[in-house]
Amino acid sequence: MIEEQKPDRRYDLIVWDWDGTIMDSTPTIVHCIQQSCRDLGFKEPDDSLASSVIGLGIHDSLRRAVPWIEPAHFPKLTERFRYHYLAKDHELDLFPGIRELLENLREDGFLLGVATGKSRVGLNRSLKHHQLEHVFHETRTADESFSKPHPGMLLELSDVMQVPMRRMLMVGDTTHDLDMAANAGVDAIAVTYGAHPLSTLQEAASLAQVNDVPELAQWFQKNLTVTKE
Image (cartoon, rainbow, N blue to C red; front, side, top):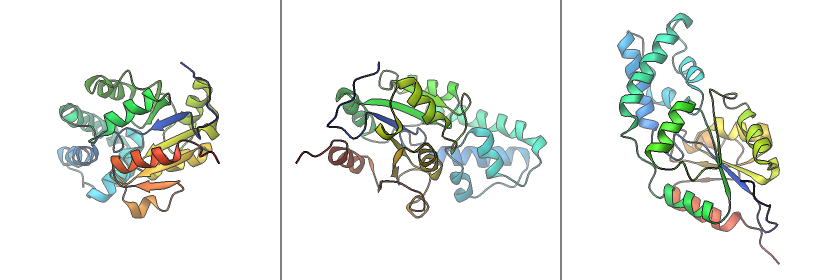
């Protein structure tokens, strides 16, 4: 699985966030958080607060999204969120052009990974539903590693795939992704079409901010290889 490093490339491994970066799930996640609160009679977070926690593990997400409820209520809130999300999960689509971009990168010999706040069960379900299981070499989820912005998922991918941090690139739509990359010493690209707005992403360290999948593909074409003099 581990491929020889190519000296004409800046990176060997490209690690992707899932929700809001590969899959267009931000509105659905926001709705499910809010609906779960309504089910239990709790004050619901507005769209901005609910979307700001996307990318974290489910427990961290809900605690930050609804900090005004008592800790004893979080298990039931988590259960309700999972109920609503599972009912919608099969309806979610990939961002247009992302499948082709991933497959092209794989065919070009890049290693591909996932570091996500989803659960292992949730990620595997999405990979199977969207027929992307063959694309990624390794994946990590928040329920089997540390939640973002801890660098644990990237450290584990680096170790398992034998790729040094300086040869890795993170792609994500939230400051949680960018902060995880910074904490691991990994370069990162921010996409602005997901959960966090450009104004928020600009506050975190990244090589660039891109507005859609075609622009991301163009950035890759210009920056993944080393220009020879």
